[in-house]
Length: 472
Image 1 (cartoon, rainbow, N blue to C red):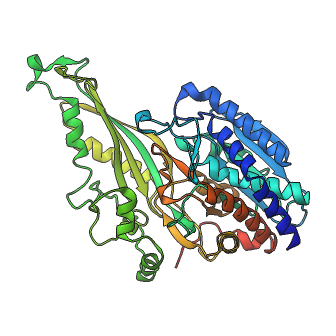
Image 2 (cartoon, helix red, strand yellow):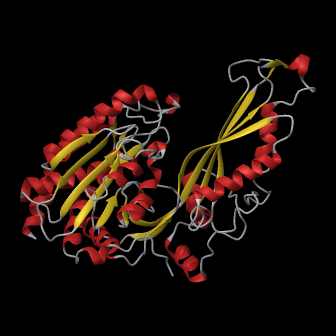
Image 3 (tube, helix red, strand yellow):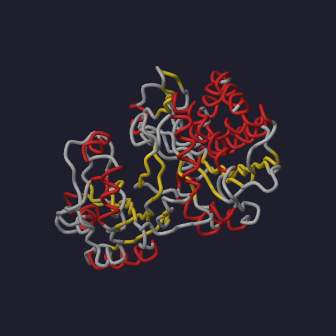
């Protein structure tokens, strides 16, 4: 225990420096969705690589891809010990609308016990917990209890278009016994959670085209079908009045879960009231017969993320637009395959598009669902780490979100991914005034230390490689 005390004491003594370094990390506007920030992405990657070198890792590299670079580092001086692959992402979502921020999104500030800034929680702060845990171990022990490989990407917020190819090309170099990432959240303050399931997704763009150019609606209104009106008509066919997705065949492969699994979810998961409170909503909506937690995890969903068409400026402009576009976000559950859902979507859109306009479906991203056995020893190692640092056992939760790399690690590397997050529900991920609760940052570092210790005490490969097992 003396060694652990030295490691944790180092982390505690360096908290002010760690906060300042995290603020420097957040200052990079590493917005992967906006090409104007490509230079900021590269600068951020180099800065992160320097942090890993300072922490004491070996073979630190900034590896170019067809998009944003990957930051890689390793420490492989523990022969016979398990290898842990640590994943995170240093890119962030756009900060808009800027008018809703209380302080500039890339000028991070501490207010009370929270650090505010875009990426503070998703995922720079959570990623940094692992970096600082490695630094604390190497600074005080000159060694790690396990072998470690770090893989930090800059495109997660645009659905990781180049990461799967990178992992496939480097599968031998990235081989590991277990992967871990911190990009998820607690059930509630003081109630840590480990996510054991993620939904998949299919992101599509639907464009409806009409006349070759904008038309004066006084001259042509009532005679030419408005593409924006036609788009709204098409979108209205995607759900029925009860909230079911109305695309024929969509539910054919949706897995039915046992009553025992649903009872477990009801016992461990958030209540309907908790979810409505987190959303700032008064009334629920969705498929009848399911709780809000079930609707957001074991049931698929379709969200319309945006609709664009016609004049968007101040005042009026009397036009019929030439085109209209909608962004569609499908969240898929185990056994649903993105390619099959794409086929069903295209068939449905073709059937419901009026003959007076033309429609086009473009697929922007796709990822299957991911599932890890709740009994996996790697999850037990994470549970031990949470108990040591937070004083309570974590709950095991399903997540309605999607992290594409989890399926990639299962498919290509054959390893499960431990989703060991430190965000709070109120940390406003992807929203204005995003924040990271600093007590969770400090305890998150401790948790990462204890996790590596716990993995080191487990038998090697056979104990960890149980990827994508069905839950009874």
